[in-house]
Image (tube, rainbow, N blue to C red; front, side):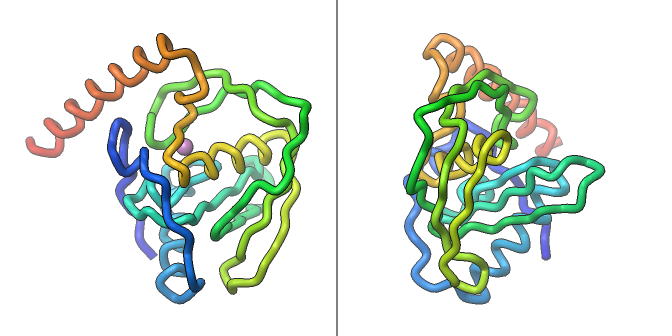
Length: 175
Ligand code: NI
């Protein structure tokens, strides 16, 4: 397993509509393991493959609280098959936009169909934070970031901050 570098916005890979996984093989399972390790190290509650530079429809989530048992879920080719009309507003962040947060309105309850790490078809229902997380991560594999759900004004301010932060990081890495 490996901790992979997380790509920061703005980056074309984060705007890419990712391709479906044909076969859940050892390579995909290795990606899933690396993504979990990367997510827990960050730490975060979800991570999508494009955030580590892989444009495949793979996401991992774990919304368990600090004192709870881990609840890792890996979803390959996840698809929202139902979303509630009722919505909730949650202050979201993203490992690709570190230290930036904004209120985002999404369905409060979703049902998602996906393949597990053995390639078996599964369904999961989520509400609360799990619903937020599933929708946020599935957005990622369609090239959508949480800032795409907020006003252009707020988004532009955040993206300017990210351009600065990326320049700063590049300088630090070069030094
Ligand atoms: Ni994210």
